[in-house]
Image 1 (tube, one colour):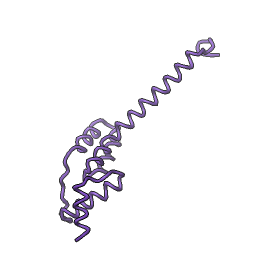
Image 2: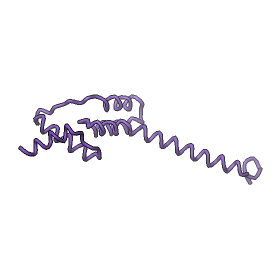
Image 3: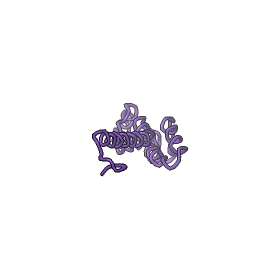
Image 4: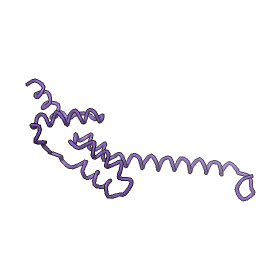
Length: 118
């Protein structure tokens, strides 16, 4: 027996498949958008890439943290930790970006290579 006492036909099953595919596509899009700030921060070698990534994923609780993470990912985070010099800071950023799975820009790689030589 199907819905309302009538047997299910071909189009009923096709509708169920279409709804399941639509739900999967919406969930995939939602997951893609939630991880976007973190991927942008990693690609741009942001010094706080991990924090941006976490804030982007946690932004599903409310829209405002996700928007903040998205803007933060594009911010040119030129932050120098006073415990390290500029060369050591660039080396630390390079290591964090590589740990997060991103590629390092040439300017960070060149500074890191000079630091390791001295």
